[in-house]
Every structure is written in C-alpha cells, then in structure tokens.
Image (cartoon, rainbow, N blue to C red):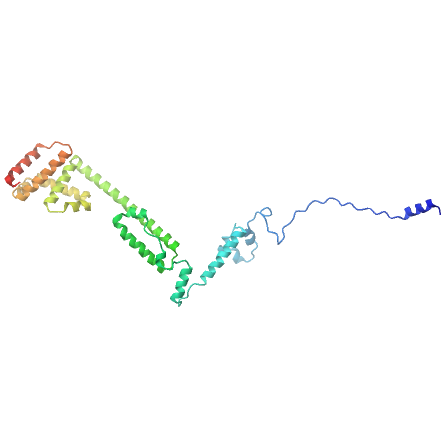
Length: 302
C-alpha cells in the first residue's frame, strides 16, 4: 500500500473530540441558611415579630406579656429574657413565713436595702426649708428621720426611699403653696371690704379701735398678730362701737366722770392727732379743743 493510501485511512478512522464551551450563567443570590443571620437587607420584619408569628399555641398568641416584645430586635428580646430569669432567681429567695430574722435580713440587703439606717443619706432640701420657714424646719427634719426608720423597717433600697421622700416633699410643697394663695386672696378681699366701708376715714377708724382695745385692757399686739382686726366682720363691728363711744353724749359723759375715762379719752385724742400730723393732714379744731379741755382737767397730774 502506498504512503498516500495509509494517510487517507488514518484520517478516515480518527475520532475528533471537541472541548465543550460553557455558556455564561447568571449569578444566583445567596439565600440565608440556618447558620446565616437574617440581615435588615434580607428582611425588614423585626426579630420578635417574626418569632411571634410562628407561634401555634392560641393561648400564647394572645398572651399580654409576649405582646410587649413586638417590634423588638434580637438583642432586646435576649435582654428581656435575661432580666426575667434574673428576677425569677431573686424571687425564689423570698423568705418563707417562718424564716429566721437572719434570713430576712440577708434577703433585705440582697434586694438593695442599706445594712444600717445611716445608709439613707437624704435630708431636708434647701428649697423646702425656705418654703416652710426656719421655725418649721425642725418639725420636717423629724419627719425625715421617721421616714428613714420606716424605709429601713420595710426593706426599701436607698434609691427607692429617696424617690418616695422627694415625692412627699413635692406634695407638701404643693399643699403649702395652695394654702398660701388662698390665704393671700382672703386677706386681699377682706382689706378691700374694709377700705370700701371706711373710705377716707380708715386711718381714723383704725386709731379709734386701737385706743378702745387698749382702754378695755385687751392685748392689742396679740390681736393684730392673730389677724382678728383684719377680719371685716370684727373690724367693722369694732369700728361702729368705737364711733358710738366717741359720739354718744351719754357714754362720753359717763366715761368723763372717772380719771381713767379721761386718760383714755386723752390717749385716744393724742393718737388721732399724731396720726393726722404724720399723714400731713390738718388737725380739726374740735380735736384741738377736746385735747386742751382734757389736759386742763388733769391739771398738775399730767
């Protein structure tokens, strides 16, 4: 066989193998697996909401406690469970009814109560002291000490006791301010009533009442301090009595029969004259005449 025939036979029997070409494949987005955390990009649903949505127990689905978890993240749910377990552990330490004093004492300290009453370091604050006044501070300081005793006896922590005491002070301050506002309004209304009744004769009427009170032996300073003379019902009545004593001829004549009555009249006239001079007013002639007449009646005894 010729060489050319051999070549043709080899070519005819040779198997040609082609290498397949892979077609481009679109990338497949990675899907989360049980070991892969769900990121916000993968799901916008809150961790707790997704978890609660898988509940099958109808009683658990409507549980109010679990509803508090709605919208919370995984960290928030974990923190909630951690605190709940911690509380249950502490709750399990609550002393039984027949527990010893030592057990109860240890439990109180574990719950945050100071080891001694001195552990409560709160005191009467400056603002409240100013509000009640220096004279009343000792009373409220004794209340603070009483509060410490009660807080210790009931096992309150220092923070809780301080919070309760602060609330007490705020309540008392509100009551005191409220009473003060009412008293101020009452005093203003009372003075307006007296001013309207007496008008320009107010100073004269007040002087006449003062003189009458002194003449009767009353403690004038104590009456003024009590506020009785600022009460319209009392002040207006006393004003009418004082006017009757000054204007009534029979009463004036009876009083003039005694040296004491004459001295009282002179003291009253002198007070009226002094008041008018102090206010820059002219002393009426009838007061001048009355004063001279009374002074002459005493002669050398003045």
